[in-house]
Image (cartoon, rainbow, N blue to C red; front, side):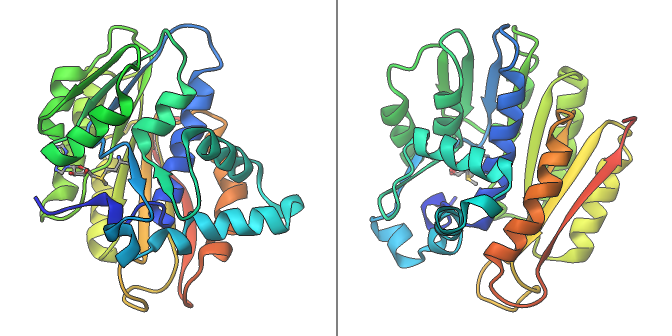
Length: 283
Ligand SMILES: C[S@@+](CC[C@H](N)C(=O)[O-])C[C@H]1O[C@@H](n2cnc3c(N)ncnc32)[C@H](O)[C@@H]1O
């Protein structure tokens, strides 16, 4: 297991994923009843942007830094979801050139004292960093274990309200098939819960086939995609997406306003763009 998220922290794919995370949590937190946040590929909690890994490939500069710079220069043009996300990132510890908060930290800062978090991270080094960063947080349990199997142990949460993030590294073949199985677990074990499934889009045919399999589930799914260039036009990942199970009704209009702005702001070469689609289910 060689994947280290520090190389990619704050890139365009994190921007999309963490924006959707904030939007879904904001909606859940409108009600007073406690919620559970479950993150089965939790990572290190935050990433040192001045460190060796992020320093070698500063992907955050073409991601969150671009968004933050344009938002500061032209605030009137910024879609509300982008503004809201940047505020949540500031609260979670985003410091240009210093630190980028990961999903557990972003969630932890939004959640209230009575809410709970369950995090899985398989890499012992990342897990140790995560433990150190989250120490003292009420309602938190971290397990150093396989996240795919973790879903079955953690769902449904006792609160019966919550958000699940499934954010695998996409370093091994078979991740799309595992994501389809993860959706099945979420629907079977926690049908009413909201869940976010992230994927890297390296091959349009494989991605289309994955989305067809998700759509065949018949449950309510929203798909949001962002591409910063045509496939292969620049080094590294050029496209990524999230699929949201039981999205809050506010998410689709918020993304419809944010995605075109993001695609334009984060474009690195021609051939990028965005897509937002209801995959299946009754709306
Ligand atoms: C994309 S990163 C997670 C980033 C994090 N969710 C965030 O948004 O800040 C994927 C993480 O999964 C971890 N990982 C890899 N295989 C795993 C597995 N089978 N179970 C749990 N964690 C795993 C990696 O060590 C890495 O930290």
